[in-house]
Length: 474
Image (cartoon, rainbow, N blue to C red; front, top):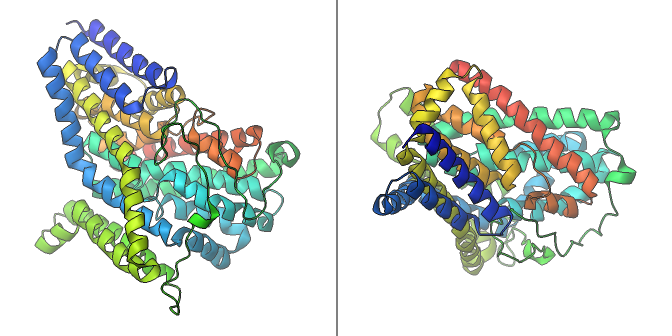
């Protein structure tokens, strides 16, 4: 088949997948598999070869990151159950003070809290942010809303064990240790610079409280629903069900009667230990230092398993065995769709490779005068604007770009980070995160377009610039 025909059929497959998800409300997993089927059959792979490629791609990506996603989700669910998020945000306020709260909160949410699903993290932390907004000045709502939007979306894409970071690393074959180190080096300056720039704009009149804020709910009041927007990938929420917040669902980290509250550092210690072990394993690999114990403990699967076991043991002393079992049950339910979505992204990547698109695009990228990483960013940004889901767009972009990674002569981690940066551009009304932040933080739609759409887009551009700088050294 000619190169032109392959390019046309690939474009049709991607557009059809987007239309199925956005226009006809088809589940993203089904949409990706249907797009993969069309691409395989239209490029004359044959029925057997197409199905074999799809199933193998699904299995390969599950082998890479399936357990990692499950372990990360379970840890996040348990930390949510013990009230660790509420206590961490309150501790940040007491340590860093009101003025630095947007920055400290953004760094915490984009790094250590990324094992927790974004919807859950918003619902838990938004009421805290609402109460604290009045303590940091007249632009408190704007600054905290922007800090939350930027940190949540950047963290899920760049920081291990965020599900987006795990998925794109698996699709592109990036080691989790390298993704963790490079993602950390990228996400911290990105969120700090983006929050700083947005705070500057807000102080210069970009934010108008009278038009951008709406009446704030009572301290323990939550909106009962958010609009059901097309194209959003709802992680941990059943299709058609509106995300609801139950104040009673936030359990305090207190143990059996008579026991003192569990130390916040102790609650997060297992998760932090996991990340340290993964990073140590990656650094040892880079330095070509061979040690059997470190190789075992630094393996991401083993490291996250250690973290999960440790989190479970600590949580038993805080909420008891029954509470831990409930949290684990919730985590298993939440992980189902993201595992399927990641697997479907692997199927698309395998089909694109089998169709021969990698060689075609590799030649285009090599001949292009535009920096390849900028083109990667643009592809992911266009997909995100069309689909409305950060996770789905970065997985789809990674699936399309995986076959050309060797031809670009770039480290795959740079492609992963550039695609992640592009997938953050222009979060808007098709995103569930947009509506959660709009309703739970007392913003008007106009206000959310500023704090979420503009704020995260600024972070997207900053991240691209930093990735280009990183490409000089990697």
